[in-house]
Image (cartoon, rainbow, N blue to C red; front, side):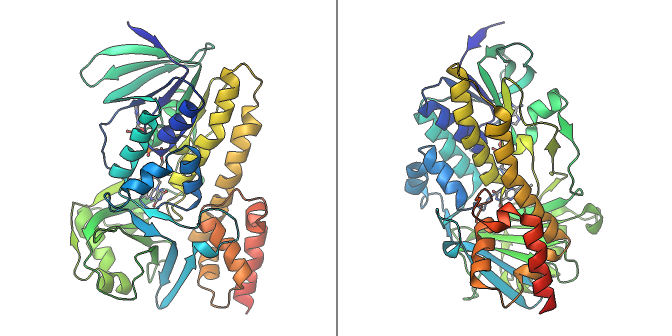
Length: 413
Ligand code: FAD
């Protein structure tokens, strides 16, 4: 079998893989990305957080995004809005506590992911589409992967380090039996793109709208407008809440109609494509790395979509691992636990606290509390904007304790 040699092998050209690839190419490493699909391809995860713009910039890809934003109908985004029954509230990310970008985009992932991947390629990353990683060997110093092309050809590549950015493909967790159950219950989501025809002047296209079901606090919807009059709409809940006899289109439509504000906003909307369903996406692993490999983005841990944190976490993982891989390849000592896993998990754990509190209702009480102190709101806004690694934010450093104090204050007044 043909064997090739590179510095870094990356599995997957999604946001984690493309950003890690670009960062490592910037550090003069020979990077190969193996991607099983042909881009552009559909992916879910369409509302970005401002924090991820810092990672895109760090990778040298910001200009690629900004110059194509209009052509690809990226929607300027400056915050998040929430709706439950007759309560509406919103967070303006430009008024957040943490320094850094306060705006971002809502994007169709097909074009966005291709843009990032093309940007990485311009920097010298070799990206091979339509090729599947079938087997890995991380036992020897140099990790080896077995690849099958979509024309049936097979070959091997060895590298000095292997990054798994395969997202829900979870190549290394499956092949190396690293998977552990997620702490979150299985949830399911139905979603599609619509021609939204929204005429309500109060609707803010610059924000993602999260709507809580009027009767069930743990069922919620996203409405993510794009700049071309289309929008992404989806509903999330535990599988038992969905009548599995209905088609995905019927289910999504019926759930939209159960919620008066969405029914009103989407009164004249039409589905552009059939609704899709995704189930059981929360995932976890024992350990995020080995001596010569690491798991990035969703290939490591995926929590929940409610705060749109997935792409940001994926890019954060890329930004943390790139300097570690660079040092290791250059023969320097690395401490992958403390330079990658511990700092990455700090932000993931912060999001985890807020996701749990969303579903048990505590964080919803905070969000919809009308007399929020502006400085507290700014700190919460920071987390919603993706700044979950800011040690200066008390709601990051002591998420659970601070949140519980706040919940008590909101409920006592
Ligand atoms: P991916 O984007 O999944 O990329 C992985 C790539 O690896 C894919 O291109 C795949 O084809 C490739 N691959 C897989 N297996 C192999 C293999 N064997 N060989 C070669 N290539 C392979 N995140 C947000 O930021 N905002 C949101 O609004 C949001 N909404 C979401 C809604 C839902 C319902 C869900 C489930 C998730 C949502 N997310 C959101 C999360 C987001 O989808 C992911 O966190 C994000 O895409 C992770 O990026 P990644 O690079 O790790 O993986």
